[in-house]
Image (cartoon, rainbow, N blue to C red; front, side):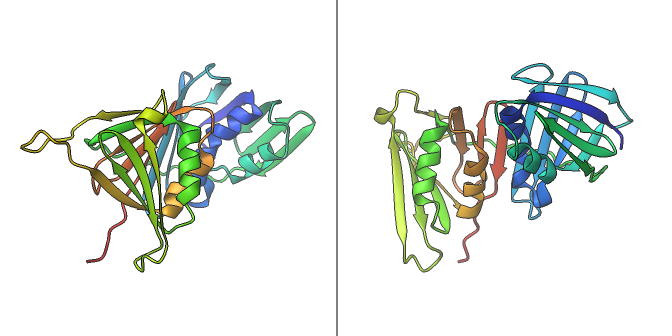
Length: 258
């Protein structure tokens, strides 16, 4: 292993840190660690979802020490065992994780040891797109909206200058449909900010629409904390970006068969 490190933080904070790995295939997360900064990133097996979380040492309740840095300092680590162990202990307690040839997790009286599964694969870079609009809102508002529609197979984000609507339908048969609309006037902390919307000849801003598999939208909602300010950046028929604090995740759109 190229990098040996010890991480300390409240159990709940560490759970949120490693939750990003649940988006990837087999719970793997890429870790790029320096004494000052740690970046965790994931990509799912189908390369539909990309996620990244960058944190500073000794900030937001997490600190670490790098005992040995190799030439690259980047590893691909399976985090399923870490998440499982943290879930078995007190969320408010301090937890300590040592990652070397083995992963050792201690939290209160609990101690778990696992073999470290990793390799030196290089992580994929996050995509970069010029989006049409950025929507900001409390994460609980978004989570509640998706949960009301997320049992359908296809999710569509529809954005106008005054509202953000989440539409859902049940596959190509359209047997089941639903929608949840969030209006600017409903929330003080709700905002729609044009980024690259192009007005038509009458000065009207067109609607922005993009469809995504509900499974991928639900996967992000599952790991998103309910007490944060979050954002979504969208462009018609492009991947969407969603994030909160230091986390950003991209999901590719659903391609409809003509």
